[in-house]
Image (cartoon, helix red, strand yellow):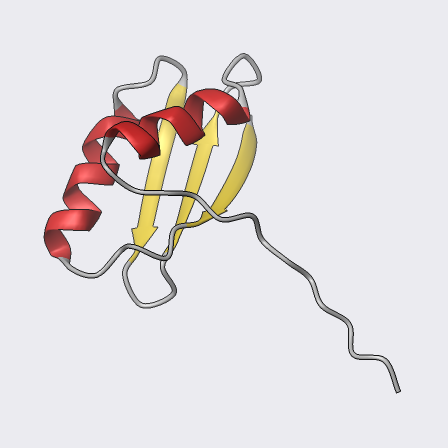
Length: 76
């Protein structure tokens, strides 16, 4: 089992949540999908055979773009 997280800035309503949940849940090997409207993120638990590209494709097929997470560390 592995967990992938995606930043999906276009999530704006419950319809978006349902559309992404339905598409990603349909990918064989996906165990759990959590679409968070407030943080505009999608967290997916799946078996090891599911690739990140498959999940990005499923989110795209639901009509949403995926942005990579960034981890910014401020420089002093």
